[in-house]
Image 1 (cartoon, rainbow, N blue to C red):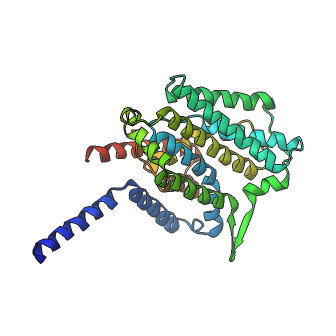
Image 2: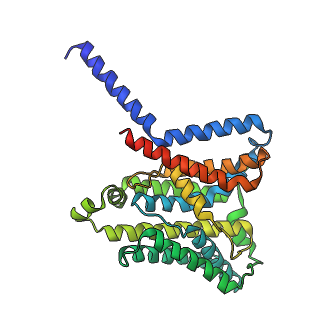
Length: 331
């Protein structure tokens, strides 16, 4: 091959690689987040302050942690509508054990176990009971919220110990700033779940189930086991988010995390997780969660009424799904 032809082939390869990078939806959401940050930095005087930025990261940390699990569920072609109620139930379970004198580590472990059990129940209803994910998790949403209201009589659980509240309120001093502890938990879990999805056999199986479940089953992979696993992981991660949220608030209300399932699903979908299954990354989910929280904060800082927030969130979700569908058609 001549040097000229070799150069052309190399140029095409570089161009193709560059187009593949640009086509990744993660790049698009990062650019959107950057544009929002630039706009709010210019439009307001308080957005870029360290206090505001760390408040933003603290506020979306438990949403992002739950969205990591939701991402896995959606990759398999399912959805978990119960995450908001499970978040509230897990935090409430830990709080009720704490006020009864149970040590903080055991109370936290109990709350995480509740989320794991609910997630496993979702997986079993979908795989063994043959219920559609929408119906199964919608039922769990109402059951978990009903348990929250039933066991408390509608009253919040207060007087949580400081050692527990520190999980959500404590800042780790790094240099001249204090980094919120929930942010550190979120980043650690982001790395762990990302490595799990991209570097393990089970991660490959999750993508395979979402890409073509029947072909995956015929290849010898137990698809039911994969689904039970992802719903269990989603419940467990959601419970972590619920415990951190409760620790931050310092009180466990039976209505806590109401409608948070919309925020969690939005974080996953905006971050590039495809409802068609088989696609999604933890990095994209992390950026998606940041976009939703920056959007929420931006509306407040620009003086837009909070009553418009849900309308804007719904619009963002619809646009994200439409963009995903258009991207698939162009392939």
